[in-house]
Length: 445
Ligand code: H79
Image 1 (spheres, rainbow, N blue to C red):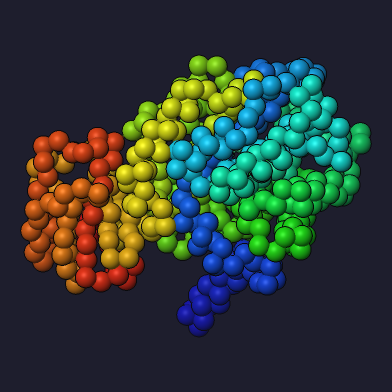
Image 2: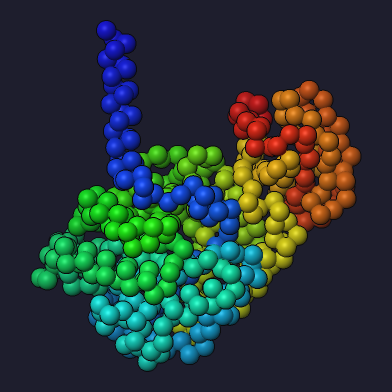
C-alpha cells in the first residue's frame, strides 16, 4: 500500500514537472535538435547592451528611477547621436575574438528601440542619429558570417500600456492609468514580427518575464506565435515565468535553453545552456568599469565549454558608438588564444573528466582536451578512464609529451614552463570515440 502511494506521488511529481516544461507546447513547433546542436557547437558569442543610457554611464536594466530620474532617463534619446557607430567594426571585433554569434539589445527594460519601429516613436528615428542600428548590425553579421540574434525585454517600464512603470515603488505597481496588458502583448507581437521579418534573427533572447502582469498563458501563446512567424528561430528560456537563470540543473522551463547569468552554469549533458556574463562589471557602458583579466576571460570560456555550455560575453559600447579600445584589445587576445586552441572549444562537449580546481576537460571524436589552469608541477596525474587506452599525449598544436598509464592513473611529464599561462591544452588521443566514455563520478576523480 505504502509503495503504491509513493509510486503515485512520484508519478504526480513527474507529471507536474512535465506539465511545466516544453511539453505544454506542440512538439511540432519546438526547435529541431539539429539546429540546437549547431548552436551549442558555436560556444562563444558577443552580447551587446547599448542605448541612450550610455550617455549617463549607468545600468541599462535598473538605473531608471534610481540613479537617473525617469524624467531625465526618458529624454536621453534626444541627445543620443553615436556618429562613430560602425556596425562592421563591431562585427569584426566579434569575429576577431573568435565569437560566432552576436546578440543586440533591440529593446531593454527601458523600452527604447534601436530600430525604426512602426509601433512607437520611442526609437532610433527620434534621435539625432536617425539610422537603423539593428539593421546595420544584421547586415554586417550576414557579411561576416556571424549569426545575428535579438534581445527583447518582455517588461517595458516606459510603455504606457505595460502596467508597471517603476520596479522600486511597490505602490505604483499596476497603477499606470493607461495600463492594458492585452494591448501591450499585441504591441510585443507587432514589434517581434517586425524584427523577425526585417532582420531574420537566428535567435530571440527574451528577458524580464518575472513581473506579475506577464502570465504563463501569455508566454505559451507568444512562443507559439513566434514559431508561426519563423519556425526555426531559437528562443531562450526567459519568456516563461519559471526560468532557472540560477543553474542548469533546473528542469522546469519554457524554451530551447537555460540562461545562467553572471556565473558559469553547472555541468549538464542533457539541458542546454548559455552563460551570459559581462567583460567588465556593468552590462551597459560606464566609465572606468573594472575589466576582467585575460586569464579570467579565457578560463571563463574554457570552464563554460568544459561544463557543456555556451558563453555570451557582453560589451557595453560608448555613447559615441565605439567599443572601448581596452575591451577590443582583450577580445582580440581571446581570439589569439582561440586561433591556437579553438579545437578544444568549438563543437566539443564536456567531459569525461569533471571540472576540477586546476583543470577541466572537453572532448571530440577520439580526443580529450585537458585545459590546464594552473601549472601542476613536473608530473600531471589524471585518473585512468576505465577501459580506455590512451595512445598519445601532446600539447594541442605542439609537441608530444611522455606519459605512463596504469589501471588507476595516467601520469604525464610536463616541462617546467607551460606554453600558455592562462590555459594550456593537452590532448589525450584514445582508441575509441570519446563521447562513448561515461562522465567520471565524483568519487572516481
Ligand atoms: O540584460 C541584463 C540585465 O540587465 C538583465 N539580464 C541581463 C542579461 C536583468 N534585469 N534584471 N535582472 C537582470 C535581475 C536584476 C536584479 C537586481 Fe536589482 C538588480 C538586483 C539588484 C539590482 C532589481 C533591481 C532589484 C533591485 C534592483
